[in-house]
Image (cartoon, rainbow, N blue to C red; front, side):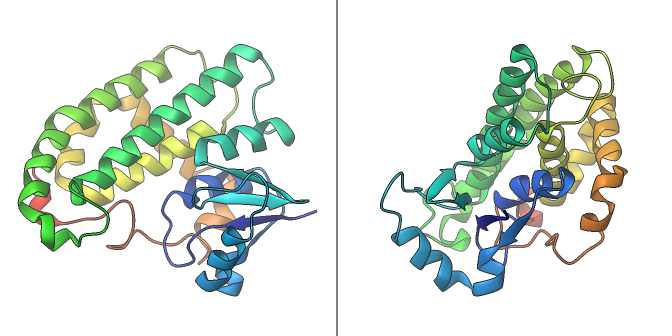
Amino acid sequence: MAYDFWYWPTIAGRGEFVRLTLEACGIAYRDRAREDGADALMADIADHARGPAFAPPYLGMDGITVAQTANILFYLSERHDCGPSGMKSRYWLAQLQLTIMDLVAEAHDVHHPIGVDLYYEDQKPESLRRAHGFRHQRIPKFLDYFEYALQSEAGDWLAGGRWSYADLSLFHLVAGLRYSFPQRMATLMPGYPELDALHDRVVALPELQDYLSSDRRLPFSQEDVFRHYPELDAP
């Protein structure tokens, strides 16, 4: 059975964290909004009678909906044996994923600090102020934690001997920050060798080679969660 995966069809966004796990774990799915369009997504989410999702991304199967990025990834890991089986590692990875999504939300709010209903140009002065604190305080604070998390476990991955959804998500987070803040990340990343090496290990995973080289992996864009505005970046 293939999952119905629902997310906006033209951006990577938060849905990309889910796609990476679906692809790397070889889980069958249909990317429904890319097949049927955004109107189909809106119609589907409006039709949820039980356990409705607040917003995409979400999975649909057998009348059940699983939503929220971190929750979806935890579900897939449990259901498809695509991660560590020990209780400590399972909840450790869930904790890390939730922290990753916290930083994703902060990265988004740099270019939309007042409200998502306003264009970036309508809140540019506030974005400039927000970006300064994000570059100099928030990015290093989170990267310090992720570097420490990688150092705390033996092996190449967050849970030790095998990659997990959290490793894939951390790869995409680093890629997104490099797109949004190339100057700042070029300054910071030499101080995070474990994180830099993890990014490169995920790029080299055999399970992801087909996906990463395909048009199924959408590029970052100015409509996405991660956006590059040169005026918001600095070393």
